[in-house]
Image (tube, rainbow, N blue to C red):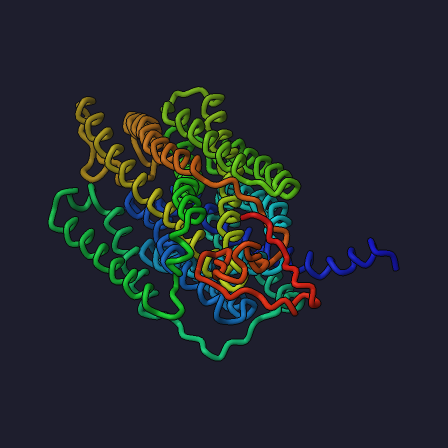
Length: 551
């Protein structure tokens, strides 16, 4: 058998495994956005309100965000395959329950359960791929992952809209549609995924740290969701929730700094590359979630499109993400360099948001499409490449925690983005509709003048026109806020070192400097502490050491 044939045969099981992993990632990402276009119909059917609209999305992101670092750390302590199987089953059960929900309260609760499965699946898939493929080669796979995320994130609204418009299916199939694919992925991974897991007998799960992190983040996100609506920015509720969140997170840092197996290793996230990647990921996460959620609402409630048409209108966002992710991933695998692509991505992201900040209910669709294209290119060039920067800076034994940390902060950015932008949108819409109704001088039934209902079909024509105008102008306002956050991300990534991706799955041992090999300890690549000079008898008695790629 030729060398080429041998390599092809050897890679076949890995490709089968990767296909199963990519199915899991695609379906979980799809579940986060497939309901975005269908939500007006879902909330109308279940008699929901604008505040509940945001919560159907936020509950999923909140549960996913709070649990992500825990799942990431568990991936370093327990077999990744077993954890992945558990997460898939959890997701399937939650999806079925969401599809059978009878009111908005049930739907929000089941979506939170689904978020636990989403957070687990996404971080475990990335940690598993990182354990199989080197960072340099991973650039190409990350391009494919980014393309799948693009299809799932932006194609989700299209699929959701189509399912909603088909009378014999309806919106409940937005939750059912991913179940058969996850079952297939479960079978594939059970049969093909084989990892060399290091069996550990000294496992200590930091349950206290995990609980404090989840409680602190959840309290902060709940405040972001309710402030300005349910209570004022300056109020006792604000003081209690913000202060409570800070206390919980401070205690979490104290605990994480003292336990042997922290959920989020502080030495990992406080280094230069991870810190920069994390801050930038917050901006990208907000773009990924907020863009899909509120653009779908804009096309329906401000422009009057059907769910299917609204999904089709977001195509430029999807195409930009797919093309940018695939091409940049391929180029990064060839060169091993990543900074230029991340910086360029944040430039496109900022310009795209800036253009979208000018839209209202009458803006040219060409302008809206160009704005979406810019955001799509920005997310595609930066999202997965920021994950790559973090994974490249840690050894194999910390890949789970590293993947969990970067996914956690990206999800945190998305959750905060949806919550903050949703709160701003709800307040602006309510104010604009109230003022519009007052200016019209036409009395309407109580409860319909503040935009709390999303059932446009049941509104009088003049009120529907006021509502469409309110959603159109308010959507532009929330994207202006997004522009400011994207600018922060752009400034931060300018300080990213010129990272050279390694071509091995694990880090190579650091080579001691010749002039001080016998007199000083050498620091490891992770900067975690000194190691003793190596014995000259190693490496075949040559005394030579493998030289690591710069990182």
